[in-house]
Length: 196
Image (cartoon, helix red, strand yellow):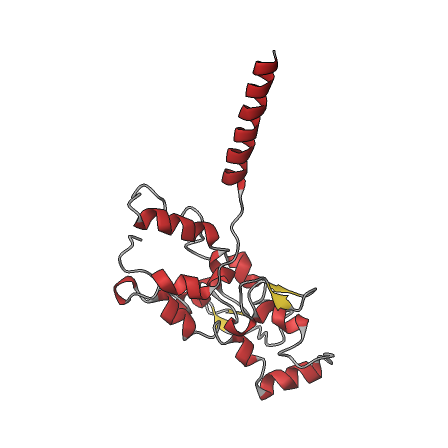
């Protein structure tokens, strides 16, 4: 009886450990990790395209005279580059309580890869397995290859100080403040080696 109980406890412990390992959630890694695999010319230079994009310069945009004018108009308590109301959209995973992004993300990196594609720690782990020879690994299993429209609309909406209701011209000739299809095309950075 005692032996059976010990075996049952050991089995439960193993199952809890294995179940916990499968249930783990991805955490942020920072764009410098993304650069390691996603800056190769033959694969579309995704990281390099992000680095040249307005998203990478989102924090810098808050230091412009235009941002100062908008902050003054909104009567913010702090300059735009320090105001949580602005930083929540201009810095990936910005935590209003701590006044900083989730570690190891850096404030100066603005809106980086993981804002659109999700925290990438599990994706990196998959990449290490794949590079070590396990070609059964699904590299898209733990990352969003294509961002969700809802993620974009979390910041590109009527509450944004720079919102313009007529920014985009739609296919039928109408106007919209945000059009996911057109916005995504502006920031496209596909890997030409991947099938569509």
